[in-house]
Amino acid sequence: MKRITIDPVSRIEGHARITLRLDDQGHVAETEFHVTQVRGFEKFTEGRPFYEMPGITARICGICPISHLLASSKACDAIMAVKIPPTARKLRELAHYAQFVQSHALSFFYLSAPDLLLGMESDPATRNVAGVIAQHPELARDGIELRKFGLQIIEGLAGERVHPAWIVPGGVATPISSQLRDRILFDLPSAKMIAQRTLKFFQGALDQYKEEIACFGSFPSMYAGLVDRKGNLQFYDANLRFRGASGDIVEDQIPPEEYQQWIGEASLRNSYLKAPYFKPQGYPAGVYRVGPLARLNAADQLGTPGADSELREFRQRFGAVAHSAFLYHYARLVEIVYALEKIETLLNDAQLLDDHVRATAAVNSTEGIGMIEAPRGTLIHHYKVNDEGAIIWANLIVATGHNNLSMGRSVQQVAEHYVDGTKLSEGMLNRVSAVVRAYDPCLSCSTHADGFPALVVELMDSRGQLLDRR
Image (tube, rainbow, N blue to C red; front, side):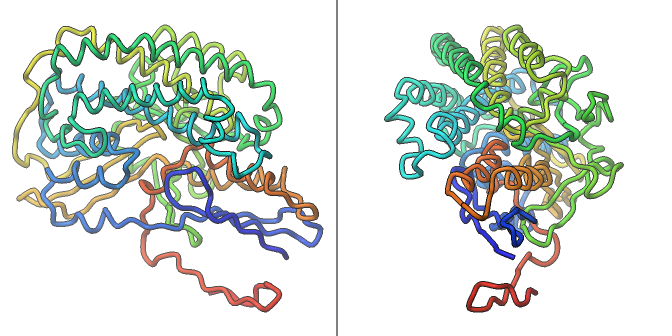
C-alpha cells in the first residue's frame, strides 16, 4: 500500500495534514485528516478568576477573538446571573456582525479565491493572494476594502482590531459615540455594493464548478444553527436547532444549558481535534455540520430583506437543504449581506447611543454557559467556578470541532474522486486541501484533547513500507 501525505494543509488557520493510502491499483483506500496542534486553554485557565476568561480565551486565535470574547462573556454573564443592559447587547451584536464581515471576507478573498479564480490546477507558486491581486486586481481590492470595513468597526468600538478588552462580563466597557456611528453609516453603502457585486460574480461563475459541487463533501447530514422562535437566523442570542438531511426538524429550541444532552464529544486516535456528534444517534452516526451552509439549511429564513432574497435564490438553485461543502463559499457571501443589513438596523436604533452599557455583580451561580454563532459555526463556552469565582472546570466546543467528522468524510470523497496514484499531480492533492478550506477551519481555536495525546510511532523500512505502528 502506498502512502501520500499532504503536509501542511495550506491556506487555513492552524496546522493540519492529510494522509492518503492507495491500494496496489493506485486507488484511494483510506484517508485521515490529522489536526497536529493541541491547545491547553481548558486546563491552564483552572484557578483563574472567571472575569479574566474573556481576555484569556480570546488569545486562542488572532482571527476569532471577538467570537471567543462574546461566548466567554455570555458564560460570565450567567455566572453573575445578570441581564446585561439592552444597549450593551446591541453593541456586542454590532461588533459581532463586523466580525462576520471581516472573517468571511478573509476566507473568501484571501484563502479560497486563489483556487476559485486561478484554478485548482494552476501553478502553486502563484496560486495565492498575491496571484489574485496580479490577475484580478479589482476583486482583490474589493476583498481588502470589505475586510477593512469590518475591522474598522471593531477598532472604533473596542480601541483595537485584535484582542480588544472592550467586551466584558456584564456588557461592554464603553458606549459608542455618535461620530463613530455616523462614520460607519457613511461607509456602509460601499460595503453593501461590494458584497452584492461579489455575490453576483460568484453566482455567475457557479456553472464552472458543477463537478466540485457534486463531489466536494456532497453527502446528506444533519445541520445545526441558532434560530429564534420564528425560525429566523440569529448569530448572538437564540437556541440551537438540528435539521435533518431531508429537511425535517430533528430537534429545536435547545437552550445553551441543555447542550450536553444533545452533543457528545469523541476523542480520535489520529488527531488532537475531538469529534462532536449528535448524542441521540450516537458516534459516529450522529454527524452534523455547522457554519454558513448549515445556518442557511437550519433556518426557515434569515430575517433581513436582501439576505432573504438571496436565500430564496440559493434554495431555487440547490434545494431546501443543500449538501455540498463547496457551497460554504456561496453561503458566506449571503451571510455578509445579512450582517451588513443587521449592522444598518443597529446603527439606526436610537437606543444604541445610550451610555448605560454594563451590569456588575459577583458570583451568583457556580456554572455558566455561553453559546453563539461564530463565523465558522456554533461556539460554546462552558465554565464551572467555586464560591470565590475561580475556574475549576472549563470546556470549549469550537465551530471547527463540530465539523470534524464531516471534514474527514469530505476529504475521503474528494480523494476518491480526484486522486489517481498512477499519474499523481499537485492539482489533485490541492483539491483535497481545497475541500478542507471550504469549511474555513480555525484549527487553532478548536483543538483540545481528552486523555493521552495522539502520539503515533511508526516503523518504516528503507522502501517506505509500514512495518509496525504503536
